[in-house]
Length: 390
Image (cartoon, one colour):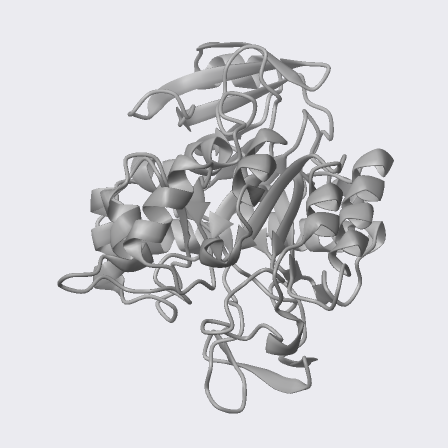
């Protein structure tokens, strides 16, 4: 990603603009910025931009939002749950066009997730760019669907957990659980506290997902992976998600986790509810090609992370690669693919209108692309955070 001449511009010119509101690209738009927020979006010309020495980009979209990212830039959140590590992960994610991340802390012993919450609180207090909140993927999962998670640490949520999770001040909180294992009333209490609960690593039936949705379940984590599948008389988690009119779903569009035909089916059935996620590990935007996780050796080869048995262990893909893959392999238009990286995840977090869309009053947070859908720049709150290494 090239450096930008002005770190704090007062405007950006978009030759094509996806604003996250309409269903079509808008040509030749000037985005006026003041104090980190958009004041006005208006038609303009390239000459207008040159006269004001305003940088122009071929395609501008709301800043990408990754609601599931475990690490990047040789840094894994579980290994280093602190503000400095989050800054490195966020910077690595920006290489792939991501403006906002939900750093994801996977299953660990006891209430070790409290360290992740504290790290996010500290990072946000310090003004680390792009940290929306925290995603806790576990430990309240199913022993039947552990994936690469440490099955020894998977357990049932208790009152102490409920008290901790419903009293956090870490921004948005996304919690992945196996809903079939939640105590009665827990889901409603989490929902009332604003925690966004997703089903993942779950052995739930379709009926259990339907029931959970009525009590506050808002989505599913990495659709198709580590969950019950749709069969002729049992919809499972996948079928219940397709049948729902409201459940969101993250999906890993890397060609390894989900067959492209299934990705395309999900895109057709739920275009307004599908969210691109990277599920990236420390190898993304880093130099590492292997690492240890729960005593297992994880290796990166041909864009895929696996353990010694060949089991997938997170992903090695950026958001912009995911966008391009949805266009190339799932039959999505540019607008549809961008929606899955911006509007949909914002709504999944209950933040629709606040992030994921560009309009007067919104934060000036942009992902700027070239004609080949490569990342040219990422702006967060009116600032290019990576200029001069900032």
